[in-house]
Amino acid sequence: MDDQKPEQRTLDIFPMPEPQAGDRYTTPWSLVQALPEYPFDLDPCAEEHTAKANIWIPKEADGLAQKWYGKIFCNPPYSDVWPWIQKARMEVACGRAEVVVMLLKGDTSTAWFHEGVLPYAEIEFIRGRVRFNGKQPPWASLIARFHLENGSWPASAPSASGRNPGNVGAGNRRADPGDPRSLGVDMHAQD
Image 1 (cartoon, rainbow, N blue to C red):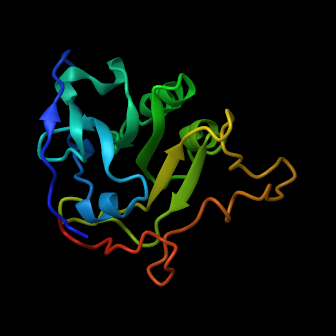
Image 2 (spheres, one colour):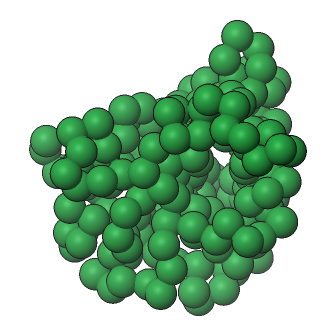
């Protein structure tokens, strides 16, 4: 797979507050290019050197205030992921976004995971740690895919009885370097 960064253009609209320093993590191109939805139409949370789609919205333009269209890739600020998760769900539900693929911190103990991701997204746990900016953070990561299947959200959460409804483990898979169905990328590659 070609690891070249595609030509990009920007959408400048409205100002937004500066993110926390710990929110500036560049997603490796090898991870993005291995996703089945690649190439993406829009990256709503990017800088010129971090954008993973031909059209991207810089922080100053506030991606939360813009309309999203097509196939979206988003690595949101980990200090405040909840509004980005809500926006992903809204854009898919209203039909503007076909799919929103988010790279999130693999923190399954949080309210945003249980209330915003688990009931609405297909979840793919990434084995190992993704290296951002050549550094390995102290957390795991996951891919959350927000999309509708025949007008409904994918059934991804276990039932109240704790039984698997059939999608967890089947549609939601952990990336495994030895499994040809997984992402199959070097998560330690430096981009």
